[in-house]
Length: 303
Image (cartoon, rainbow, N blue to C red):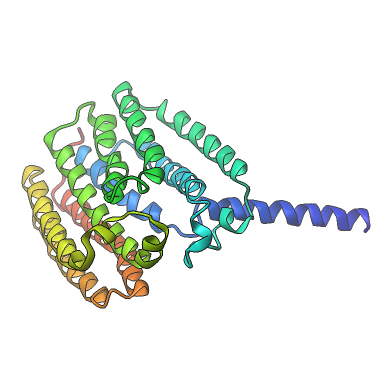
């Protein structure tokens, strides 16, 4: 092998490893970023009354990407002995051997340090809340071995950006912030139960717990109840924040999307349940568009 061939081989190996790291962080599957991003954007726009601080906006956008990536890395590390036996996850980098467990932990630490650096740019109250966010991120990957409701823990982790956004923007956390947090939590349970329904048979064999298993044959009925509860919560958010018809139109569209998701998953086929999960990103987008349209056509002074 010539020196040039050796250099090409090293370069190729390095690029392949970078690709494996990006896959471990799920950068090739951004659905999780979108699902975490939408409630964050809801909160930033509501807290800033349509005028979020530009620096805070940038920090939170980067934080969403970094923390979602860190959560995926830790999740795959925790599931390294489970993923090889699940059809949908057996090709993940750790499960396939493309990334070693110690490499994954190192990557998690690097991402965590970047997140810490971002948090130092925010106020003290937000920094305290960030500690709770970090704990939720660390606990979630392991909790599904001990409780049947890991989706609620994930909901708390994904929704925690809401009080953080209000604290960063306004330096206090009003009732509106907690209502948006609860709404985000409910929404997470809805879409992650669809996600868990896709893996239910494998999870039953492996002893992994989820709301899909807990709900059993009542899964779609319970999801439907949670969807109605979310719509009610969205209505109260609009009432407290004094939002206009643009926002309430987005709630109507959200309800139609929810009916569509029930229809997609009606046969409980794993692929269809997974598609219902993926389609939930449009709910987050719809609500955000409603909020943006309100502040665009009903402008308020910045806080």
